Length: 151
Image (tube, rainbow, N blue to C red; front, side, top):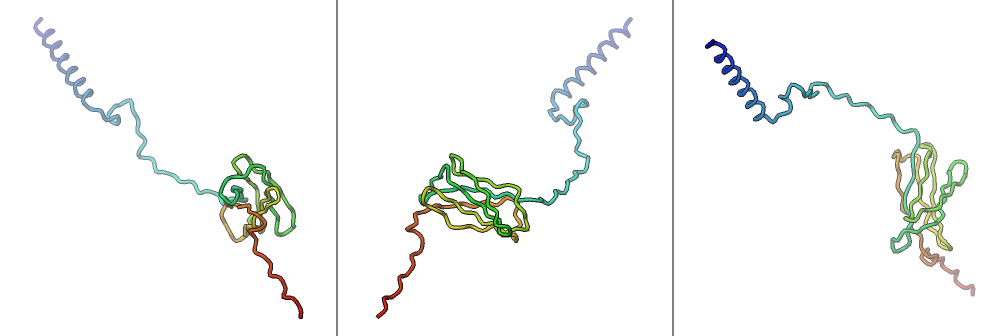
């Protein structure tokens, strides 16, 4: 009969030691119910080269304020085809699915004012191109010099 209390006492000490050891260890990697997959090699996928590009930007006035409902015209340099976009409240525009092998020209018009033409070259290999178009007064364009009067 003396063996039963001794065995119970040893079992209690062993369980207390195990519980004490587990409660002091806060590393989740030591918990047998947690699987940390740190031994798998990282596989980096190669990204495919984009097949088309996007032109986006903002139309602003000469003070830098965005212009809503400005007309942005994109002209295809090869065919002369024109695409238009009306800017949103924040002055933003966006043209998608543009070819990498064609030159484009973009220009904005707001009321009786117009921006300078901005180029998008086929040699520019960026997939996402941003152009800010500033619309100014027609007075801001370079003046033509008048011909000298003939004598």
